[in-house]
Length: 477
Length: 95
Image 1 (cartoon, one colour):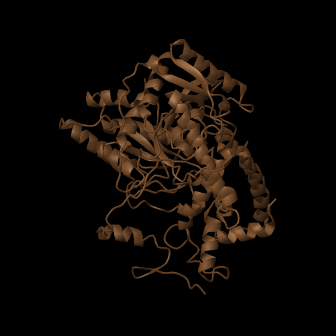
Image 2: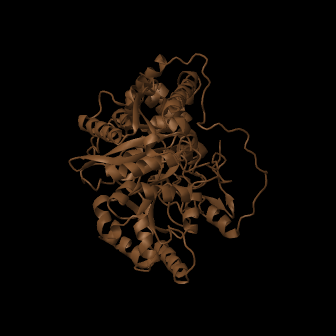
């Protein structure tokens, strides 16, 4: 087995027994990134100096027999919309192409305190807006399973890096499926935690009522380790809460699993549906209780999401004005930039990419006078109905099983010219964000070389129940 | 279908300079997306309260205190100003 194939628990064993040093481990990954990143473009900015510094620090503690975290010396990759102090943070946008983070995101501070080793920053759709990582201002990432296909998005750089063994684990962010869908496309485990479970401080805001940071890993066990390391209340994020996670005491066979009929619809790839149904059947054979449920407002989730999200985007991205930081036309005085308004218009018009401009326009429209009630307010009310659907369902069942995406990874270029067809790729993932629930994508089969993921959705702050079923599923897969 | 004038108006509200050709594309794309949203008109929202946040929380207060930051941090931030004079942010004239 190659060093770079190891999971967190396997790597920890070797580090703690001193079979390998954290420095050797970091160098093995940095070498691999140097060789392999050209093929898939998972990393935008490798951070070798930081990685070597942290690895040496971890080794020093281990050599002095100090007690260290299970994450000490473990190399990770970080989506480039999460701040790492003194490293570039671009959000894959031209408007932030020269931006250096002045401080650490809370999740990064926590991982650094556990002596993790940060290998670099990974590619994404600009400001995490997209489902394919093609919307990056710095070019697309490729799926390691098939280089002609997308890795999914927006955390496609992070999931491709984990799938290609360019890191042991990675951090992503999920606003409408941006961790789960690329995890499904790349064949890795991706968790979107309960809204509020993980601090968003230092995550570049996209849609603040939906965004969550989460782990991308090779196994469920690793997902749990990283989730426990990054979660918790943070004074810097007033929406974060101390999660009251209890270890589930119930036997796996006592779990009640719901399968919503609205998630098995026309338009889903036949082979994807067969794999998901086969997986559910397999769990049934193991004695788990499975029942069909209904989430009646599912058909409205995508419209609801694509109104609320751009509305929040248009407000959050108002901060990029060419005045305080980032790409600016303020200095190049031309006949076109005479006054303040010109600086705004030209800096934003040139600095933002096409999809970002489209969503800012859409959000500005749905929030504008005369349309607010018809779009934004109506969507917020439908959001209540979607949330209630889940609350009702969770009175009957403990976990809900669905596909993550209606298709496996699609070809690069296939959907990029038709925004609406790209939005439809999110049809099974957005409701979870609207309701603030935790959900995971676990690999459950393949169509040829292309992985397919099962989505497991839980009650708020019941990540551990998701992990319990996920770990059981890994043993029977 | 939204009009070209609406596209121009929204672009102005959003503080985005949009080139002529893109106005046509946006008119087409936004119209298609807004048509898709018509689906929401079928939902019965009579008497339903809006949800702005998925977890219910209210009145999260903290003391309104300025925290001292290092000169180094101050410099990191002011170095990012596209235009400055001494340590002040310089802004173009409004009129």
